[in-house]
Length: 193
Image (cartoon, rainbow, N blue to C red):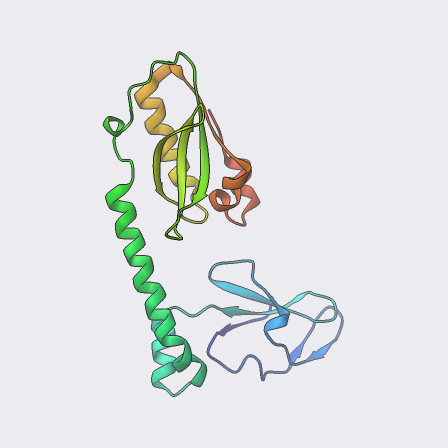
């Protein structure tokens, strides 16, 4: 796999040697495989085997690099802080508005309840996951990337509220990417019943 490099380091100036095809040389952003939220694999530009890993920076890493005079970190810091603050605001909104109790769910008359988990973009630009029944929306809350755990929590509340009448909670095709993220194993873990 190769050496682990901090994002704000000299990884782009380093001479890499591929153990698979004997290529050697420098790499750049085009040679990164962004398969994770926390790091990217550095791929050999000739055979695409991993020659190293670059860790993505967090706010602290960016602040430290900016304090040391790194021009890229200095330029990135204001937007990074803004994104972090915005994410905290979204988490606070989610905590205020999410479904937490069966008492928040409506009384339903249907004998067989097949719910749909969907994904929509609101006019203010935020993404929401919705619970629908027969084309009508019963609940809406902020959506977060790769959130199978939340799907299971909501499914548990639906089962608790409606008992034997609950048949399924099925994600739409549009919601699957956000629900499972880039992780195929999450898709395989989903149980709709």
